[in-house]
Length: 278
Image 1 (tube, rainbow, N blue to C red):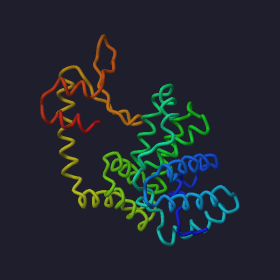
Image 2: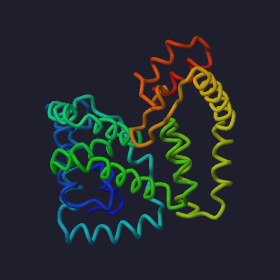
Image 3: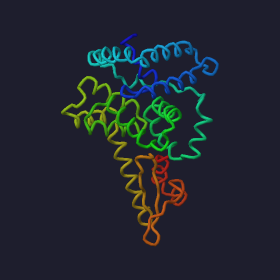
Image 4: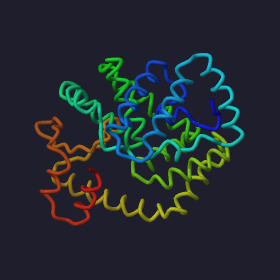
């Protein structure tokens, strides 16, 4: 047991998960990094780390000892690093064939998995592995929401403003700014009183204010043009998808999506905004 290693990050799970999640994640990760399939030079190292992490986290007494020591070490050395949860995803996916069948019958699950994968591919992968193992497909939305909320709290604290900003940065794909926010929270505490100042400083440091204003202006133009022509743009935060509706006979009906609107409008700014929604 090595308390300097984050066994949870190695398996791609969160500290609060149940044993069944740990087992499912380990089983999937072993298949993912198996030397017969994984072409990286670090295949042996990956397998060793996975086996070590699982041997500790799957044993209740070892896990309890590790959690106690790791929590102390985390508080002392600020070990909950967002960077540590990320690494390049292998190209081979041993779960793909079975997962495609699940998606065929539960199509909304794919959107949930992609939403979690945007936060961390390991988080999305452990979610997929857990659902395959538990068969709790009807609870997929509840499980995804819980994993997302717990991940954000583990790596970005408890302040609502900070959590919302972290989610926004991840959705934008700005991992550098998210990593900087994670470092700030590790040092300043889980619920800093100057949360607004932290957000503003990171926006300035990563030049997010100008981009934010530009995107706002483009979105306003887009929404205005659509509204003038009887359409409305709506963001489904749970499915992480933008949808376009048209009003007919007093009811809102969903269209084919943002790509349809792009074909209807030639305004460059609107096209840029629509592209950003994909």
